[in-house]
Image 1 (tube, one colour):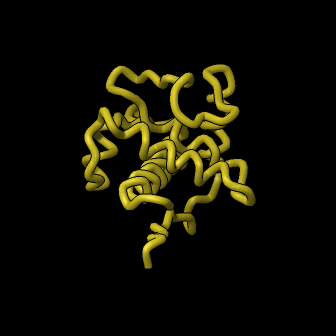
Image 2 (cartoon, rainbow, N blue to C red):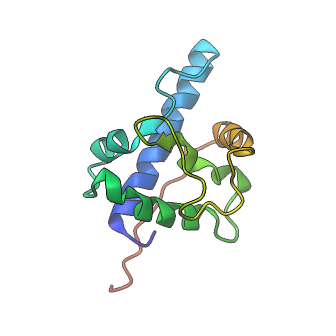
Amino acid sequence: MSTHNAMLLGNGLIAHVRMVQSAIKKTGKPPKNRYLTYTDLIQKTGATVIPIGIGQQLDHVMDAIHAAGVPEKMRGLTLFVTDASGFINYSGGHWYDITAQNSKSYREAVLEKDWSEVEFMFANAGN
């Protein structure tokens, strides 16, 4: 991962997806809070970004999950965080081939993935 904040946000999303998976396993349906807001994600991870600037950090996460060799089921990970209204702007940022029309299938694939041994690591190029 190219920045420490992006690593924190990516790992926060993984933890959130694990919670959603656990709730589905227990109750058979997703929890009411299946999507985080940008503010929730920042608060849960301790990332030092403001909600208005989170897009650039999430772009780093998108770049990482679309890198060669990364399992396809990881590609919808950032679909579990939205603005406060629940909206995702697919026209900005690094969305690759994800659109409003196919986002549901990407979310489903994320929930099918075993995330137990997945984590983002910070790669400090200066060391």
